Figure 1 (tube, helix red, strand yellow):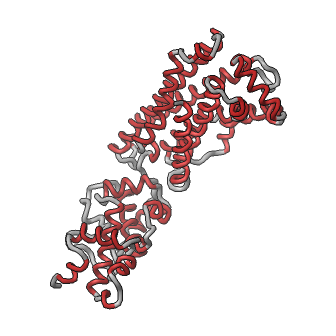
Figure 2 (tube, one colour; figure 1 turned 30 degrees about the horizontal axis):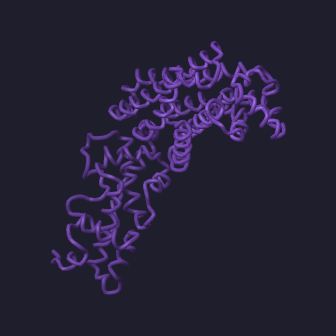
Figure 3 (cartoon, one colour; figure 1 turned 90 degrees about the horizontal axis):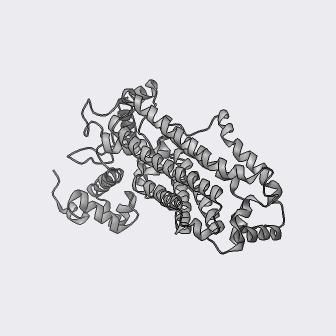
Length: 411
């Protein structure tokens, strides 16, 4: 079970990194956190419950410097979400000091022959307490690492919870942050940090139990209450990220300058003349979806930028166009776009993209494009990747097929 959860953490970490490395940099710290948790899980599994001397030799000690980064990664994530800035400063180098010290400490062991590491792994598998008795594993007593690492995680997570609490005391007066959305994200983030904190507390107590009682064998260790709590905690952490993605994308807010907002508010056509607008509303029109007092000025400005980009640049003509591309084109985090679509434009990104494409297809049909192009070619020219998706979307938006649409009389 522990190996399965570790592999799930690695898989989820890779997904988060791949899809969010440019659009939501704060999620990278969550990816790094999951990778460290997975390495800790695998190391402890092969030390306490595994029967493979090869994998024990592979995981033991080699990844221990990274264990000191679990706390800083959680802290960087929380700080980045609260400040909307995921980068590091020069002062942050202090957080990597324990990692560097531990890395320097294990170098003599890392360069030893593989046969020596196999021997060490065999000794530890025979008696788990050999990991604190064998010489030459680090340049300083192993006991320091055994105690310092969980205390470090605990301290960083507790401080991160303090940052969230302090932020909650002030966020109602922060004019750049929508109140309801911030409250929901902070609630999920607080729950996530509490799960991490309780897991770390149980791990500290498990460590104390391990060091004080000197259990006879690993079977007895497996019955300790705190081990079960720790195992549940490390399984809940990735589950929370899957079911509450708000933890990853953070608080919707913009720090747009007044000059930028003013430049974005200049009059601009919502679509080019080549695209017919639906009669009931214009795709992407901010004015057609929200009142004058709705939304915050910064997000209304972003919504207008979205509408202008969709109408003037027509990126939806590319079949591969997605929310990730829109985020990159506007240099805007994806969670800001989510908020604009849900709260300002009152529509989904996929719906808006389809409306523009169908409006363009209707324009082509009205101009008699079927005399030179097939229905499939018209769909492709409008941004659809296949005939079936074009026909399905056309019927969904217009209520009729393209063939029936051409038969309808024109006003």
